[in-house]
Image 1: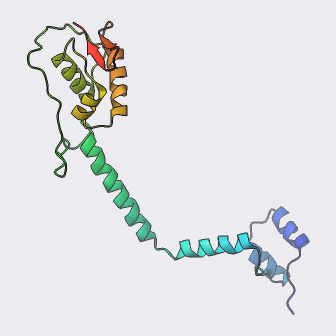
Image 2: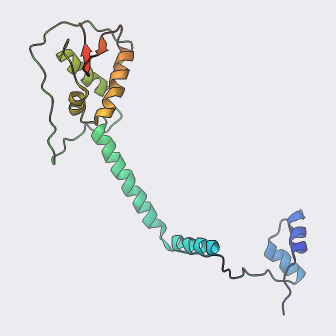
Length: 182
């Protein structure tokens, strides 16, 4: 019967300065390394089973999945982004036509607005809509429809506009909504 390395011999191998593998050390001593014993521990059995199933999957499958996810994310970013960094302007979705809120052409009040910083495309669209409806209540749902975004996102653009517009011209209305004063 072959003799296996003892715990003491393994400790000596770990503390030695010589850079050799455990297998080489055991061969030098004329001993064997004890193979892993079978276990009845549920955690070990489940973990080993998971490891075996993940090893069986091909790396190309994972790469294909990641590539597909990355492609979907890239196309979604192109749809929603209007920044100069995007490759193209967003495409209108054919399956659901986008309903634009009506702009009141009768609102021809001149408003002098000074900006502290430049606006993004979406902030500019919100400001244009507010300028078309000067001294009138504009609701978040109208702006959400204009931008094609959920209503919660509109408040971010309103906050950014307030920070970038000189003075206190963009106010909250009593009954809800926003008003740009002349």
